[in-house]
Image (cartoon, rainbow, N blue to C red):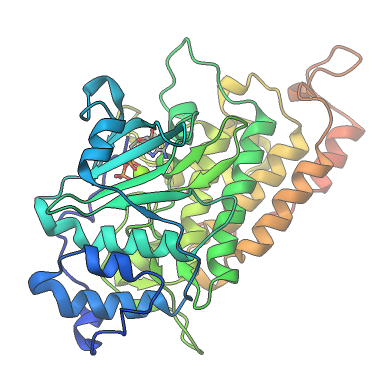
Length: 400
Ligand SMILES: Nc1ncnc2c1ncn2[C@@H]1O[C@H](COP(=O)(O)OP(=O)(O)OP(=O)(O)O)[C@@H](O)[C@H]1O
Ligand SMILES: [Mg+2]
């Protein structure tokens, strides 16, 4: 469930879009023409066409999204029955449904933002997910725009979100093991890499957080929620200036303070989520003592003191990880969390680093219990030194 969506409260249009209002694009022959016909733009029309034109620069795509009627989705979810409710976020409720004709489970998100107010996020999400296809992005099966209804239909992700498996776990729920955590981090990084490097112009996801990373039956992660995604800068521009939206705690400092949005803002958010994955702590947790409520601030002094790295590992891991793996994962997180956007790594570098981490630490999971029966958490001598040699701390540390 989402929390602290503090930047989303006023769904006003962004300033730069005011300036770029152009004529309507040729809609009739476009592969997404069904979408154009299905959405009543009313007074918002011109701004939305400008937005659509901007997104369509990414390409024509292969729109496989199907148009559903409200009656079809009502039947699929047993009239949006409460028992079918999977969760609720800032934009509305998500229900589990089933399509009889294809014998397929689906997730149905009904936007509830006072009628047409959520139109912009709806359009962006449908367009983006129609144009972008990757194994680490959730698949949009279709949508419904009957009357004032704005409903998105996705593939059903049986294991829910990363948040459900990582944060505020009930004692009965099995925590994720280290290898699964790294697998999720790597897959999510690949999703962002695709948006930044394969899409032209690049796409900035803008809402990278644990609840937006959904998991299939094998814990393969897929990014969901593209309503806030934004076409990135082109040419020699380093950023786009835009209204600050996203989720408190995950936003990069330069974006939160000045509205300067770049792919590096996503890299920062990735660093926050990676830190959540390693620590099992929520980015903002008001139930903790005041000096531990902000995860990044709590981690700052620990990042600078190698002897305290083990304090950052999630206690629910019970020490089942290698020292080297922990150090490497923390190094990646620290680099992504650099205050200065230009010193953060590219997502392609992050993917490479996580791939290396997984390959070089691919021994059996319980590596801390070595053959002599000693715990790796207390290991001494050459192994420990070797592990520490492989640790490369970012030159500036974080927050410096
Ligand atoms: N495709 C899906 N398959 C299975 N469960 C899903 C799917 N999409 C969403 N969910 C569930 O519904 C919950 C609510 O999702 P939603 O995206 O509406 O809100 P959120 O991500 O928690 O918050 P926010 O609105 O701030 O993004 C998710 O946390 C997840 O558990
Ligand atoms: Mg979400």
